Length: 598
Image (cartoon, rainbow, N blue to C red):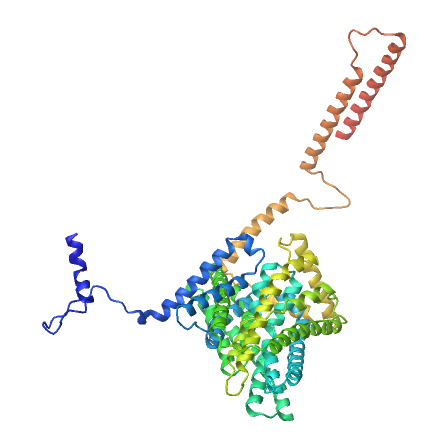
């Protein structure tokens, strides 16, 4: 005890405030001190990530909750509780900053989706996806904007200050389907591949439309007037943003593929090139106000077949699991921050505006999907049924992208920012909680086809590839370069393997030895001479031996006579006939056996 007291004595002396340090020039050395400001930011970030990971772990340990409630709903509720607790303690809850969301949390989710994007179903349905992403988003934005403007003019003094451009700006924010929310819900219900790629592909590709409409209407609201030239430039801007984002992603994708050719001696940094080139593609697109999401998707799709052909298996495993971990943590943090930001505010509630926003959001989605599907089904070989249309319309969830865009609005140029933000949060909560929780029972009730969990058999894979090559050949003969032709080119590039000469020589030697053994077992065929096979002779001899044993058993059965049974004259004659027939059959069988041996 005295030793312990002496050890803590300097700390106690240093913490005492009554010591007069002016009496001595020497200062007591502090054994321990607290400097939280030095580590505040990394400590709080680590604490949030740890909290998110523990919540994710606990959610999957309770099967009764995870079978009914989506993970995103639970995380938002936790965020609300954490934000309320921070508010009770007298502190200001942190808000989901737009810079943090767009530059740190969103890229891992989009990269994971783009890098592991199923190319075949995406290319087969790219026309339908683009129709929903472009025309569907445009229809929803303008329909909601015009309808809300009309309702605000009829409402009276409270909403009279909402002009048409502000309503169109709000419609462009709330009309886009969110990829984070779609991924969070659709991965849990295991919907079939067609519906999943339609809704998820739409949520990825409508980013270009959302970005263009948002910046276009924001500029119009700031200027206060719109000309015909501005509309034309807006259309041109859409193509520049979308095509420019794809080109930026392709450039970085090819750079990553080219760099991966020279990493054979430094395998440890192979995953780093994949992450850095992808993130640079996203940042480069954002510099020029292009679509960063399109750039990430294009980069992931372009680099994957070449990178996987060059990197090692361990590097591939590292890329796969690190991307999954990174995107999962980002998704968890996004939903928690949504709940915390809801408590933080600010809010401006108006029953008429919020209710109309929610109703028009659902109505525009249903009308857009039904109307566009009516046109799309005329050109599709596999038609979208009524059940498919319902799931596509019902799966149009909103999420953190809409919240961040509404939070980015300037209070000076948009006087109704607080009202817009409240309406956006209401729509997000309704789509995530109500639609996200009820979509699984509706899928089971409508008996919608779910994703096939088992892998294809060898027979199915062979026939599928045969049909794909057949359709590709038909397109080449007809002179039509469709998606089968381009998919075949992509798969050919993916099948390119980088094998060393030593490994190739070893494989050739192994195949040559095994094929030589196979040729020694096979006999050449001639229609004039048929050489007997040793294995076939052994099999015939075995079969004849079994037939002879079966005949002897039957003969012994017929010739067996009970010992203590008196014989009648008729039975004696019958026994004589049976003996003669058995002897004749035995002689005949022996003759046939000798002939077969000869």
